[in-house]
Image (cartoon, rainbow, N blue to C red; front, top):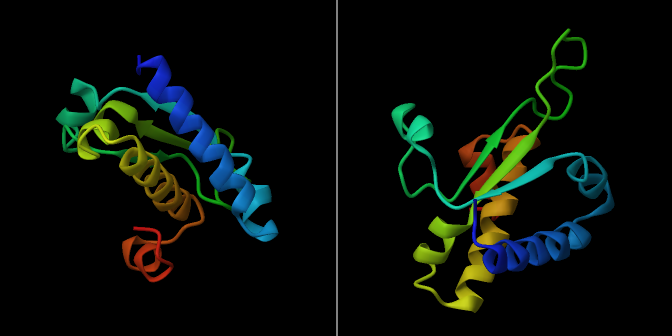
Length: 123
């Protein structure tokens, strides 16, 4: 479980970022479930993810899974402990990294690959 204070701060940043999105992105983005974890667990690391991963998108992208019998709901995981460490325990840097990580993972929800995410300034 992620630290409650860091989780609250991260949620505050995510909510502000969500409110700032253009209308055409905000609506679909509201349907993405957010999960706050401390760090990647051993299972994720065993799957090849870096232990210090900052965020992860899982599930179906916009428009995918609609006809599936078992669609996978979209979810963004923010690893607040890793983000805090990455920010060198600086509150303002942490806020910015949470914002960027959320936007980056949200880009994947919209079906954008790494290059498209970078082109949109979401890296």
